[in-house]
Length: 393
Ligand code: ATP
Ligand code: MG
Image (cartoon, rainbow, N blue to C red):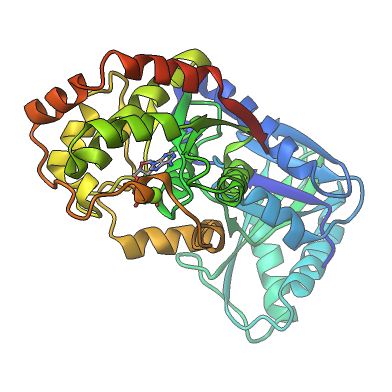
């Protein structure tokens, strides 16, 4: 079957009242962006609460679907066949031709559902339903009509032209990126943080990201891995500016000054502070981490309280109640898993203590941090001043 058009359905933006057109326009622009990667050009437009994408000639359906499955806000994708407006008899014949080609030897249940925006058309919707239904039963003797729970809903739209479609491929859901502000993702080379970024972007939030590395303790290879992950997240979230922060001197200062069982927690607090400064500079209104309750010592509830204490912006932790296996499954589905499991050195694990505190006492942590003053401020300012920004798309 050759398709030349797609009908793109969206669900949740339908409920946005007066702002609806803003969401629709965002989605149209995301759809255009995704389809630009294909070798032929599409005309993308809104019509009657739907988005249509029409190509100049028949296209490779799996490739187009794959591109659109990266566009948040799409609930379903239906390949569409357009026909010039034609008389009732020709319409019935064309409908049978379409259906028998799209579903050869079909032996299941179906329902025909016509809509007639063009009120001048000589047949009413119900007449079309009946006539096409009967013709299909004749052409596909093993099929049957089920008006309540059909396996295939065959839609016929009679407008200035005629559209046939009978298949809806699920989209990724969510809301169009850019419709819900911006957040700063703390992106490491692990499994969790790319998934966390994906989940928040799915709600329409655009992303910036920050990666802390500790050269020479962490390698260029580890950094490139994070760049790869940022690119993979950007395939869904749109272009991501990745801020690379050299954390070595800050980590060494903490290592030399603070009790070793508190290292990870204090490091995490400095990461959050720096991420928040970067967020302020780039207009991001929240932070995102891949933390999940109890996964490691720095993610017990008490540790999360301690990390959170230094933040003023909201911290989104979409994986907070996920099991590791659930996170792994999601990372495989979105395509980041294979990169995440490549071996690398993480700045958090290089200076890690044998027995990190699992129930940090807020007062004690604050007192340890005071010993870092005033020198640490200069190190933080230097790290920020020397940031490297990599555009990942
Ligand atoms: P991940 O798989 O995302 O690395 P993790 O299970 O290894 O997470 P931690 O190392 O404790 O957990 O980190 C918790 C969160 O802190 C990460 O999900 C990430 O958001 C952030 N983070 C940790 N290390 C870094 C880093 N080097 N650069 C940026 N963010 C980091
Ligand atoms: Mg990690």
